[in-house]
Image (cartoon, rainbow, N blue to C red):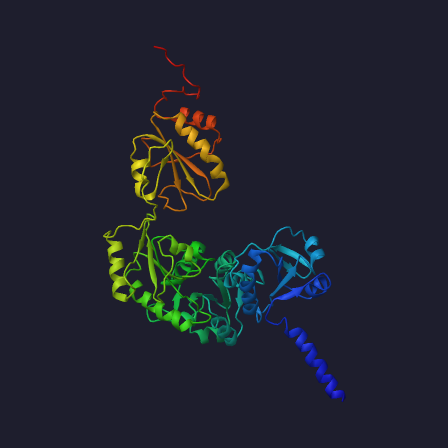
Length: 493
């Protein structure tokens, strides 16, 4: 009887702890301080159940918790509902928006979390915040564990005494710790297991991405210079065809070839590599001309929309290219190794017309404000022979709607002047270089003889503000206004 009670008690305790094992720890006012005090490294998400951003983060947060469950030193992911059981805790830590994430060391806040919001990015960021930037590999078993992970690892095989590499490696690993997983060792048995010499730096690609088109390891053969080592790592990190996601997309520079398909190394690694290997086969012959990446087509549907792809029923990759000028190209043919190779050759030799997202040409364009679309942009902006003020807007933007009648009045007042007032829907048309539009409305002034050097307009947005600016900046003095923007007296006949 006593044994049965003990067994039941043990099962009850296991059930209680097992609910959180490998998952997100649910905390509230009653247990937050006690539970978190016993943890060395905790990422806490303060959330509200109705919050849309929280709902989107939740599955990624849970995936990250699962990936981190066996880490040493341990990293715990926890959550606090600020609308119910955790109101006081959220108030204590100044939570005013959702989700708010903070990193705790015991009961103390270490720092606000400003890292990625995708599972692999959360994992990498949190690992970079815990312990030294580089993990010491003390045994051959440590080496095997380090190399068994599904992301790139960089190992410094150091000399047992007076290592020439160690000091530089420490600086590099400290700088890149949030992006790269580092290991180091001076253990003779580990060096023997890895078949490496002392003071050697090696980049190891994960076994998951092994292929016959590029080596599994890359050995650094330069001087022990910090900048050179950093360049070596960043150049080789993504390999010939990188796995591009929301967190690392900015690391990929133009000219860039992207293959979009159902990329999923967790649920379907074999199928994912099936298509990646075909991309690799072609990429090896164009590696000096383009960077290459694969991306999940659902995760990057908004990018595909920019190439006119709303939906693709095919399992085959959709191929796009953005060249060094920012021009876009889409492979129209169904994917095959042969069609992919032919497409890249034509992009390389400028045989293809760039893809242009554009509204239809307006039926009439004689209003006070000229309408620009991608198809007529050169005609109505670049080659119109006039000084030009252009507004890039979004139809849903409140500030743009407020500006619309002011812009119309401005166009009416400057009718007959050597100045064009132009607007363009930047959500429905490709914005050409060198214009940079990151918010709405964005306005630029283009002198008629320097259309390649647009000047961002940041002055007032009343009609008089625009007229004063244009009167001062106009290449030739306006007919109806002096240089100060004051109306000229009309000459009576």
